[in-house]
Structure formats: C-alpha cells, structure tokens
Image (cartoon, rainbow, N blue to C red; front, side, top):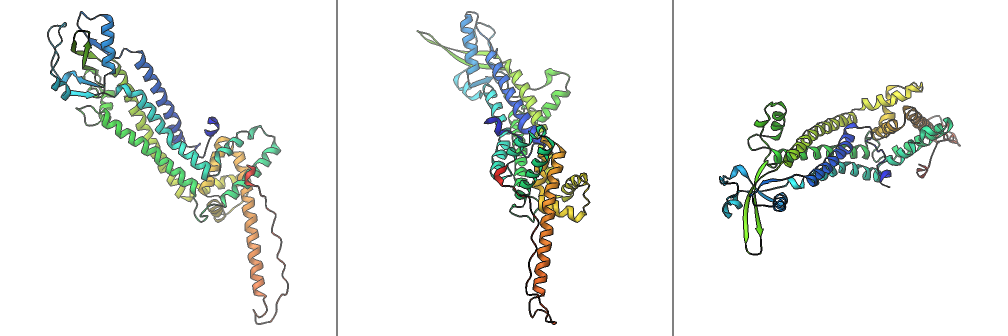
Length: 413
C-alpha cells in the first residue's frame, strides 16, 4: 500500500521537486541515522578528573556530562586550580548565570524532523491530486505496463486514455482559463517547497552563527577559503570545551565537582550541520528557480502551443495557429499539458502522440457537430413562416445526425 501511494504523480518530471522531496529527504534521514550511530558509539565527552577516580567513576562522570542539558562554556569562567587533583567548584550563582542549554544531543531527531518537513509538500500534493485531480497515480500505474503490450493493444490503450482525458479536460470548472485546479495545486506545492527550504535555512542561520561573525553563510565560506583551520570560529551551539557541574553522592556526604571536558563529538556535529546548510541553500535556489519557470510556462501560452503542435506535426496533421491556440488552451489546457508530460516521462512520446491525436479527433468532431448544429439552427430560423418578405418557408426540417463520438466511462481507467 505504501509503494502504491508513491507512484509517480503530476510533478514526476520536475527535477527540482524530486530534489526537494526525494533526495533531500533521503539525505537528511541518512544523516540522522549516521549521527545517532556516532552519538551511541562515542566517545562524546572526555573529562579531566582527579587521579583518585576509578575507571568506573570516570566513565560515569563523562556519561553524566554528556546527558546533562545545562553546561558552562569554559571560556566564560576561569576557575581552574593549578593542581589536577583539586578542581575548584565555582559558586552556585555563577554557575546558574553562565550555564548554557544544550541541544546537540537532539541533533539526530532534529535532522529526522527536517527530513519529514521536506517530504510534507509531496504528501499534500498526492493527497489533493488523488481527490481533485485526474488520478495521475492510477494512470502512472497503468502506463508503466504500456511497453509490455502488443501494437494493437497499445493503440487501443491510447484511444481509451485519450477519450478519458478529453472527458476530464472538458469538465474543468472554468474552461475559458487555460489552467485549472491541478496547475494551482502544483504552484502551491512548489511554493511550499521554497518556503520550507527558506525557513529552515533562516533558522539554521540564526541558530548556528558564531558570535564573532554576522551570518553562518559568512562563516561557511570563510571556513572553505581559510587555510589556517585554527583561526576558524566554531559555532556556539557546538562547543569544544565545557565545564560540567556534577554531584557524587555517597553514604556519608555529597561531593560536588566542576569537570573540564572536551566534546569531540561536536566537531562531527558541526560538520554535519555545515553540510546540511550548504545543501539546503542549493535546495532553496532550485525550488525558487523551478517555481518561477513553472509560473512563466503556465501563464504564457506559447510553450503550451509549441508542445501540442509538436505531436500534431508528428502525425502529419496540418493545423493553423488559431486551431492550435484553441485546442491547447480551451480543450487541453495547462492541466492537460502537465498530465501529458507526466505520461511522456513515464512511458514514451509515442504514447503521448497517440493520446493527443485521439483528443484532437474528438475535438474536431465536436467542432464539426457544433458547426452543423449552428447552420441548421440559423436555416430553421430563417425559414419560419413570416420571417422573410417572399413568404417562402420550410415546413419540416430534420437535423442531421451528429458524428459518432468515442466515449469511455470514467470507471474504466
């Protein structure tokens, strides 16, 4: 059932949408699992402890400091004694004022949440398209078996799909407009992709920026160009050296310690966030560019007419510019063009050509039927008794039978 839900849909041909929903989702999910494995494997904290500490006490102190949600940055305090065996504890008020909340333990969960947010617009598209669209996921499932059929079956299949799509295209709410609900839905989803990427980029920018730089972007590019790695400032949310407040409770008393600890795992965490920031920046640019190009192609009729005319010319059908404009704008529309492009991406241009020809034949048959009906109506009104000065009238006018149409029930697809 899950795999059926993720059949190709109307935005299958958009590389930017796949880049946001598929590749970014998988990348962030892999990074979340990799980070969780690194946190679980350790070492995460390496603390300077008194010499009388046993190995078990040292491991307990380091694990307790790693699980602590409040730490003190070592550069904010200067409370180290000259003796390793005697680490002086600062007063309680100083600790509470200078303590910093830590979130690097939650990095795997944050990355997984980011991955789900990148997948959310695609889920919205699939749910809404299956409810209000043309059933693109069902069509894609049928089209994937197209190449396995014989030549006669392919022709019959194209005729059925063309008749079905013509019926769907003709039932748009506003046929005078070239675009319908599917175009509006896809534009909204592309906007969601861009807003999601831009919002995550802004949050990372404010969350990861070091104190001595104006933006994390500046820090990223300085880190790439700077040859002296020791001069690069690290992000304050990933400190390398901290003070850890810890209590050891025994049967007789409670002893308090402030351990000086190194956090080697934060080097790994910051490199992960470093890479994620660059990746999301690329996603943001790709989503914005894709959205602008989509709006331009949807609003300008030239691209739509060129696409439809290509398949009409493949079948040696001579058409005028006005006929192509009417056919591509009124009959097919931008929604139909997107569905046809999806079919071409999944199957082949041969199937798209046969479908376009079938829709064209139905379109021409209806135009001829409307023309004959209009001529008969005008002739009938012109020959009503008393309608002209010569007194000539026709007493019986039998309308011609309309041409036979190719129809298909919606439930057949």
